Amino acid sequence: MCGTCGCGDPKNVVSISLPGEKQKIEVHTHEHKHGDKFHSHEHEHHTHDHDHSHAQQRVIEVEQDILSANNLLAARNRGYFDAKNVLSINLMSSPGSGKTSLLEKTIVALKEQLNLYVVEGDQQTMNDANRIDKAGAPVVQVNTGNGCHLDADMVNQAVKKLQIKENSLVFIENVGNLVCPSLFDLGESKRVVIISVTEGDDKPLKYPVIFKSADICIINKIDLLPYVDFDVKKVKEYALQVNHHLTFFEVSAKTDEGLSEWYGWLTENFNAK
Amino acid sequence: MHEMSIALSIVDIAEKEFKKSGAAKVTELELEIGLLAGIEYDALEFAMQMAVKNTVLEKAVLKLDKPAGLAKCNDCGLEFEVKEMIFSCPDCKGYNNSLIRGKELRVKSLLVDD
Ligand SMILES: Nc1nc2c(ncn2[C@@H]2O[C@H](COP(=O)(O)OP(=O)(O)OP(=O)(O)O)[C@@H](O)[C@H]2O)c(=O)[nH]1
Ligand SMILES: [Mg+2]
Ligand SMILES: [Zn+2]
Image (cartoon, rainbow over all chains, first blue to last red; front, side):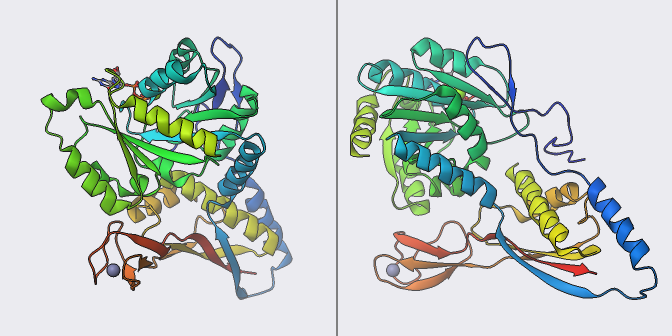
């Protein structure tokens, strides 16, 4: 069995739920079957080929992208978003950098002028969905079980469940993880990576892949700058070495400092799509 | 650890191809994983050991190609090889570069016995 990811573990079930909803819907566990079919195939073959003493070797050219299944579904999501004139934002960060806090503030500030929706990704609990619900936006919680990232299939199902209207803004809060989400295209319009000032200013150098794949970098918890050794100039310099095209916002989801620039970027991109 | 989902996708793809081929067994699996693909090679090899258990790939030799990347400097136009995630132009030292190659994530081929 696949001990590490728990794909052989019957408890590892992905669920997608609305706040207050009891019944849970199973999406995929891992699809690949362990074995059986192929064993019997092998046996069959052996009995037929009994008298052949040496096997024939040949090469099968596969040349297939490993992420093709996900990329295909991501393309489908993108088509769906385009058709509905939806701006979709994938929010990625370490656990606790402030993704949900930023969304709570954003919802309260913008919900009167924009149709907002949220897909929440966490391994366990409805906690974040309940926070978003309270802030006042329709939300679906995806629990990934042992999974360390959202994939396009989960987003596809979550978005269907939200029944989003045309001309909307959908936030997708990825599972708190600075590594794994970066490889999985969800069909989003823009990618945002959040780093908080308590995490150390060398994060872009330590985790370059996620910074490379992002369009926007939000530096959060700047209200804590007086208490930590975090050099904002340095973190930007490092992040720009990794990704020359990053745009930065310095914010505090606690004191609201810098948030109006973030809202400005959102509305501007919403209107431009 | 996303290497595990990558490993499971690899096994999926290989199993399907194997089934199509009607061959008896797989002796080698060749992958192409670029140096800038965002994959930790050790983690992937470890994940593959788990993922191939009780599949047709269990006894197959894993061959891992690790092609270097190719980037182009947007300031001076130079094309150069890259082997790390963070790189600058060897000529003008700028960071305004476009990656042309290096993020390969492919199942290349299977070697099978009939
Ligand atoms: N001081 C300060 N605290 C913040 C700020 N933003 C978030 N926090 C706190 O940081 C903690 C984590 O915030 P969340 O919004 O839950 O972080 P998250 O990224 O959604 O976390 P996960 O979903 O678990 O990955 C909470 O205690 C927040 O109150 C900020 O700007 N300043
Ligand atoms: Mg959260
Ligand atoms: Zn140059």
